[in-house]
Image 1 (tube, helix red, strand yellow):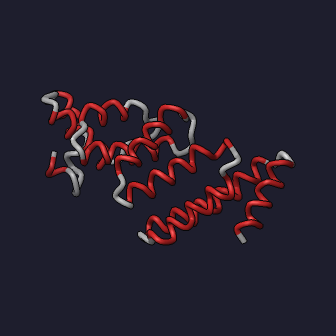
Image 2 (cartoon, rainbow, N blue to C red):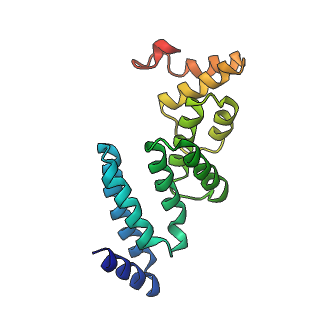
Image 3 (tube, one colour):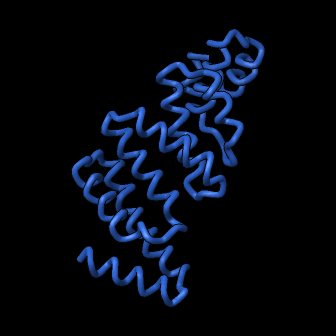
Length: 168
């Protein structure tokens, strides 16, 4: 089955059917995301390995493969290696469809390790919306650095949130 998927992907690529190849890749990654949601680490490892075998030769998905590899490393408690991969991805693939996901995952690592300035800096690269949890991390980073006015301004944005409002 793995060889069949790899052959199909190569045929699509050789025929210039990149959008179909992307659809195929997205089908595989949706399944992988469901494994992450369920916390099924054995299947996650297997699926990441399969994706690498099937898609490694296609440059246009290397950033996404790197993201999933980093995410796997993170849940496997190899956060230093995951952090290195995410930092590389963010620096070298600014147009990646997984950029915001990579930023959020890296921000969580920075939050857990009290790398406050790095957390603040990485949020400047976001193109999407922050969740309340991410705003909390940002406000906390400002507070830890003694930047109380900026911290207060961030915390004010979610004071009425039932989960995080009391922490602000």
